[in-house]
Length: 242
Image 1 (cartoon, rainbow, N blue to C red):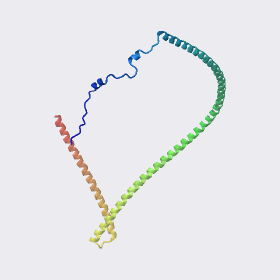
Image 2 (image 1 turned 90 degrees about the vertical axis):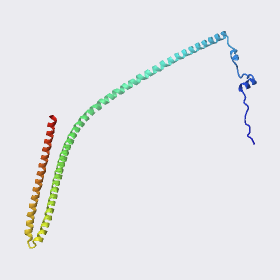
Image 3 (image 1 turned 135 degrees about the vertical axis):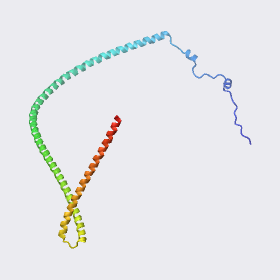
Image 4 (image 1 turned 60 degrees about the horizontal axis):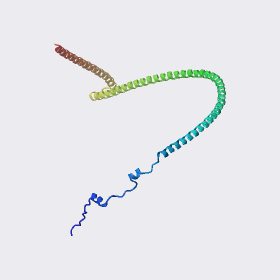
């Protein structure tokens, strides 16, 4: 079984058009347009004259309408002017009445304002005095509160220091009493207590002296270091300058 031959023969379009021959015209041709019926010059002149006559009649009609419109405008103006005169008289009367009422109200308002201004001044003075009193009272209360807080803080600090000292004393007394009981169990308790208190005071003083001496030593060391640093810096400057 072979393949089907689907090929089509090529047809030249130019040759086909020649074979068909000239196509028939559809619609009017150029010759028909050129050979159309045309009016003569006399007919054209008649049409122009008829148009001019029609425009003259229109102009006459418009003039008549304008005259009637002017008459109507004059009548409406006269009516409006007469109405305006009456309304202007009414307005003037109303203005006069308003002026009289305003004058009477201004006189009453001036008296009221003078009385109200005096009252307002008195009230302002009273308010200013009250504010000054309140400020003084608040300032005093704030000062008293700050003083009380400072005093309370100082008292609390003193109490803490006292409590610390008392606890240290008690610890020291206990330790000393224990040592003496071990070494001398036959001694009396009163003598041991008095001697322990004196010993504690001596130790406290010795500790204070030691602290003072240590502070002095540290200050002397710091001064010596500063002097050495100053000498080195001065030597370097001399070398640079030379």
